[in-house]
Amino acid sequence: MPHNIRQPIAGPTARRRSHQVVFAAKKAAPKGFGAQKQGAKGIAAEAPCPCGSGSTYEACCAPLHDGATRAGSPEALLRSRYSAYAAKNPDYIADTTHPESPEYTGSRTSYIRDVKNTMRRLDPMGLTIVSQDAGATPDEAFITFQLQRRIRDPDVPRNAPETDTVVERSRFARVAGRWYYMDSTFVEEDGVTPAAGAGGGAKEEAAKEKKGLFGLF
Image 1 (cartoon, rainbow, N blue to C red):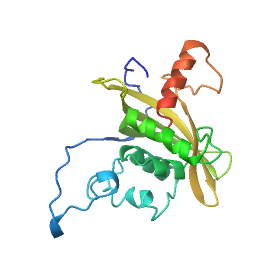
Image 2: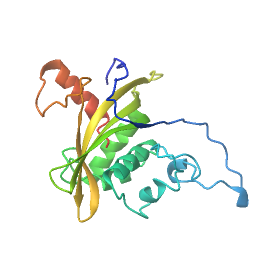
Image 3: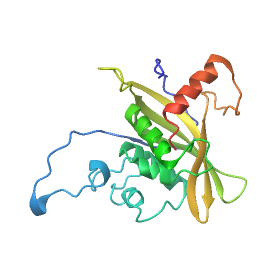
Image 4: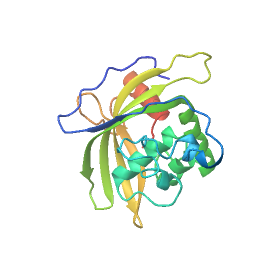
């Protein structure tokens, strides 16, 4: 668990789309025909989608979470996975992670257990798409995004959550017409994406710890 709150990262000059997640107090739904329609995990169908698309949850990520449709693009998949973390929906994360992802270790059951543990420790607070890049083939794509997150240690009573901002670059792969999350790396403040195994020392270990807490998209 990191102990320092990182300062906001100055991003590229490219235009970004951002969204702040607001957690409102839940109200008891009225009975009968006046009951408010609910989405997954208590997210109101008419509420703004957590992914920040500007649409309602019902018109945006809910159909993906319910299995009624699939993400038609890497960005749609990233946003729906972000919303799944906000909705505490570990099954969707497992369903949209490529089986060969280095993060998909063990069985589906053990992977979902790991995802649930991450969800207990961390809340996504804001998503900004920084850039999108094509991969080596039409079936590969990369998205760089900025993430605001709230981290807490559920094993420490009255632990004050920490908030920080990180930038990640995620890779997506399309198999049989369906997009999957493959892996991601942190982007340093200077815009450099560290190569695998680069860095070394305490800095690398700290990065691994942070990544392990929220390797989500």
